Length: 450
Ligand code: ATP
Image 1 (cartoon, rainbow, N blue to C red):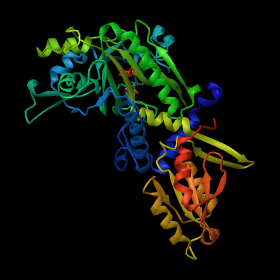
Image 2 (image 1 turned 30 degrees about the vertical axis):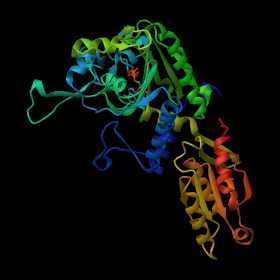
Image 3 (image 1 turned 90 degrees about the vertical axis):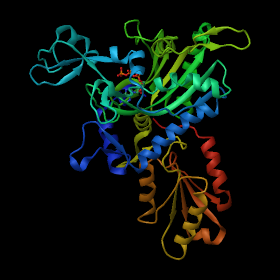
Image 4 (image 1 turned 90 degrees about the horizontal axis):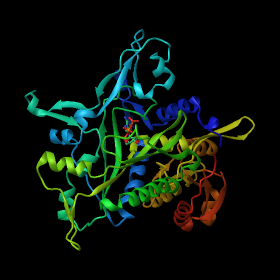
């Protein structure tokens, strides 16, 4: 796969239009003309997002016995954001095209434009101005400075301020992690590329607490774990890479940072950040709250502030990653092109489509019964309308990995056709073996295609 073949604005347009047409993602409040860069997840989109979240949650909590979960409130005490450094320095530099008034993030402009201080349209740029990304609001009826609260710009701080609660109430000992999925808000200067960069989004974050002498070892461990997780998700690894932050790019809290980038249709972009945050956060929260957040090692009696290794992935951005990776227009024969979403079967919104060949002669009832059985184990969809080939193609377009067709032979010998999305292969199998066969195929799933 060449980079040029993948980076294609047309592909992005196709994905956006498929998402709207088939109910993955809608523009927010679109009957009122929409709200810039805010998006709603439709019936298929919410299933896809939930499955990505569940996949991550399982990897983090179920498959690691040293990680526990948390769900902290979005609104927090305003001192949290002073301690974290966000009030003071969570800002981007903004510039404006002095002719068109179009706004840009300074660090997102090409070097050439920054050097000449001109916009991509060639007009002079305004002086860079700092712009704090946090949404500020007021708690309660009185709008005064003492009632200011912020919508959290990251979920991480909810974990830090609960770290002591978790240590005291669960059996975790260092090294251990706390995982959380939730909404975050940033008043981005420029939102673009569909759901890639929005002001309201979801993050999947895990903070791993370690002894300060072991930070580099765990940093490496989590880098490898996270990259491997994308392989297990069935993502094309040619489209995944690491990018280390240079010394001038490091956030105020970080000793070392790597991004995991994905090759989106608009180029390589960050998907997840892995940061060595040192003891910065716990030290600051100790100072600002006056509470002792040190950790006591029972075996040695040593007391210290743990270092934190963070893995921070965008959930809504992962939805776009999975869609971009899965989307393909495949030429079957001359003049016959199918759109197929090659999702990992565990991520697909619908796992099994069930169709009677025709509605009459009892086939619809038979198909309904089979679908009712299958829905105990899988997300199913029943469809009895239109030509069977068209029903398959409609499921290909939304990424359904398996379809089952019930025909006249089913009545004679209790067998059905199992049709596979990726190879379009059709196999005849007994109804009694259907569930086990699908389960086995999910387990043995190997990605195919571009
Ligand atoms: P950038 O510099 O691109 O604004 P960042 O490096 O500040 O982003 P992090 O703070 O590391 O981003 O956020 C962790 C993850 O959260 C990102 O890798 C991304 O997947 C997701 N994320 C951050 N901002 C947004 C956003 N505005 N919309 C959607 N997802 C986001």
